[in-house]
Amino acid sequence: MNNFSYYNPTRYVFGTGEYRTIGTLLQGSTDKVLLHYGGASAKRTGLYDAVVESLRAAGIDFCELGGVKPNPSLELVRRGIELCREQGIRYVLAVGGGSVIDSAKAIAMGVVHEGDVWKLFTQEEKLTAAPLPVATILTLPAAGSENSPNTVITNEATGRKLGYGHELLRPALSIVSPELFLTLPAEQMAYGACDMLCHIFERYFTNTQGTELTDALSEATMRTIMQQASILRRDPQNVEAWAQLAFSGTIAHNNILGLGRVQSWTCHALEHELSAVYDVPHGGGLAVVVPAYFDAVWQANPGIFAQWAVSVMGVAPSRDTERVVKEGIARLRAWYRELGLPQTMAELGIPEDADFAAMAQGACSVRPGGLLPGVRTLNQAEAEQIYRNCI
Image 1 (tube, rainbow, N blue to C red):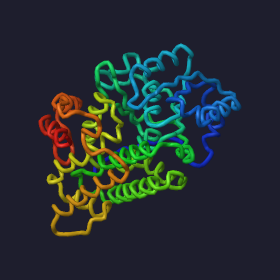
Image 2: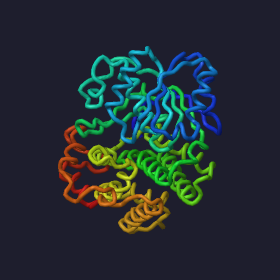
Image 3: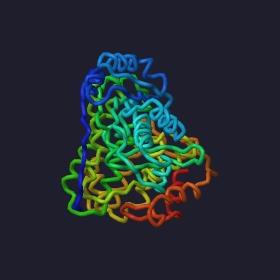
Image 4: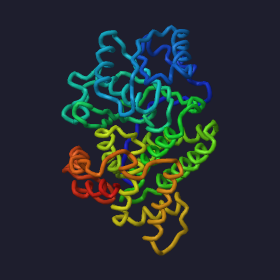
């Protein structure tokens, strides 16, 4: 196990009806917030009205900025930054899923940053001051952004989708009320579960030794995600299954599972190019890329892949490691199918003549030496071949 430092200041409030306490929970922290949300669903379901009522009852004023969409845009982030500066807002409240929370985090650090917020994502500049505090009310369990130090934003003008991480980006407060998820479409649940699972894959598949505890925690969380998602596919009104899935999504990405081990994030780098160029759902892109990535790299560390196949995918142990690993990958593909997730570029709407070379170059360009890390380091040509293997 490697040395590590872990900091997690988020107050995490979980349970039915807890979203109605947002005003009380914010009292003493701020008297005005930027209320940041996505589309019409928050208003249609009554969540927006409940949040506003709670804020007003607590004497907290707000300005609002809606319009966040999947693969949140830099343009809206910049609008939020200017609105906060104009209105003197020093606290951001995100009501939505990972896209809304990521947008809120980018706004929170852009308000205090002396330069262009996008240059933080391109690594041309470093954060110059502590971001504004962010509170979240989660409406879609998936990205884990409610307890992570990360944000991902798309620059639609340049076709780039980049992430930024800083420990000070962890939300100050996050509320998770599982009944808010009952109106989600089946495909959103599936995309979310796929994203959660991949957050663990990026940490679990490592060459670091002495990781027995986080291996076991990761395997239990992966099993829970898969079990509860399968239940919700059959019974989308199962509040307990939503609760289990949502908590698993938080654990998958608050980095407790990544402590003391080298992490990869190659699958996310590959997928970000797909969703930046073609605006595909992040979870759908991961469902296509992940199995092809596994096929390409498992031989570099067959032990960890066989361990996963047995402990998570339920493959019978065998001395034939190749058979075990390949059966594990086949079962993962079958589970994706069970959830209705895509498996090929064509199913994502991406044509065979797409510029995979450019996307591979983009994925590799943000990594040291232009190489994608993991159990096996990949160069640009190998990354391009993974894309092509998904056609």
